[in-house]
Structure formats: C-alpha cells, structure tokens
Image 1 (cartoon, one colour):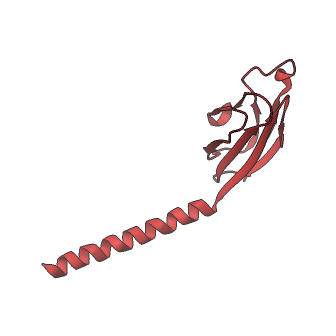
Image 2 (spheres, one colour):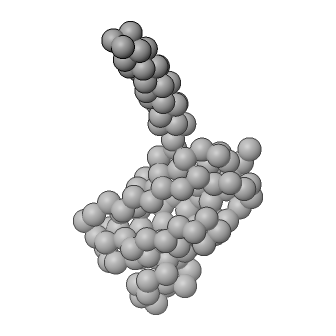
Length: 120
C-alpha cells in the first residue's frame, strides 16, 4: 500500500513539474508594451506584436480619463490618471487593427487613435 501511495505521489510530482515548465514558457513568450494616453494621442501610436504571443498593454493617462478600445480583439478598458490599466490578450490573426479612445476627452477626441500590427 505504501508503495502505491509513493508511486501516486511521484506521478503527481512529474505532472506538476511539467505544468510549471509550460507556465514558465508562456510567461517567457509575453510581450509587454507601455502606452501613454494624453489629449489627443497615444504614445506609441504604432505597436507591432507577434501572432499567438500574449500581449500585455500597460496604459497610463497623463491628463484625463480616457478609454482604450481595440474591438478586433475584444479589448476595452477605462484609463484613469495616476493609475496603470493592464489589458491582456493573445492576437489570433495577422493584420493592422485600429485602437481608439472611446471616452470623450475634448475637442480632439475623434483623432485619438493608433494601430496595432500583428505579424507572424
């Protein structure tokens, strides 16, 4: 009986070890991009990432409340001054996609946008 328990524990240890390796690989394939929002622009306004790689956008506002909307990947967030807003997604298609502020922030609001390019 003790031998069976030892084998079960050893098997679980192997499964957990291989799972940890997968998690570490996934963390290593993450791309983090710091984005700043301010009237009436994002910086950077052009972002390039790889398809299938987890993307983390760390968005801050320098002046007012803004929104961040990347509808092609179902990404939407409110961005408040003095705070970091983190959005995470995995792009599953290539191309160039527009992101924009969707919280009215003044007379130049309609021009506040950028592009995300996803490459193979």
